Image (cartoon, rainbow, N blue to C red; front, side):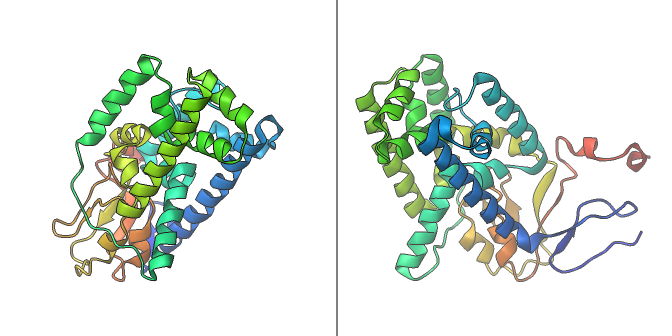
Amino acid sequence: MRIIALQNYITFCKPGKKVLLLCVKKLKHIRIILSLLMLVECAALCLLGISAPEHARVAGYMQLSARAVTVSIAATAGAWLLWMCVTLLLGRVYCASFCPAGTVQDILVRCKGTVTRRPARWRKHPARPVRWWVLAAYAAAVMAGAGMVPMLIEPWPAFVNVIQQASGQGEAAHNMAASIGTGALWGAVCAIVSAILLLAYALASGRDFCNDVCPIGSILALAASRPAMHMALYPDRCTSCLRCEDVCKGGCIDIKTRHIDEARCLRCFNCIAVCPDDAIKFQLNPNGIMTPMLRSPQSSV
């Protein structure tokens, strides 16, 4: 079968097989719809608790945490297994589409652009080693039973704590704090610090919180370094307009070297949406860890 080349589309499979075309320009819109839906469902779960509808509980089952916050330990372990596999396949789609704290940051970034009447612009920067120091401190705190640390920087416990504290659900917030060995007062303090931290990072540097501070993001970054589906930047098509760098809230696109850091890419697909030359595509990665599993035996003959 001849290779199909259409603007705004990509080929998911190699030539010679059945070709699945994806309208990549719509991936950003799909991400926005998913993220807002998950934000509403997660907020409903936090506010309604055991009275929340079943679909809101499913949203809670999908959240990543070192400890079971709103669901059982088995559900938390299942969520980790699910998202590690998804990350190996697609990259960090959890961070952009399913993490409620990430969606809150996106909304704050959008509000900043609305208030200043100009879109927020970001620039590339190298990966900061501070994330590994934060991850090491976080792991040590979890093993030591220090419940305050997850409530401060882990997105799902922090989101639940902030929502419950802000909505005046003192009893629910107290029960959560007690479940991880923290008093009600410290739970309120953690909510305030978490909210300020997310606000400051979002307004100052986009989604750098997810790459510099968030321990879940650092863990997923290890699996996302070589996903089966990657962001490919075509040097022969790129005209160095820098629009992709402007909208990359993770600062992971380097147009000078024509490189996209997969480990830090949050899969917001903003770069694909703004590229006028269709130089960035979301496609099969020949060097992905799980890529051989996606190919049929005939392809290797």
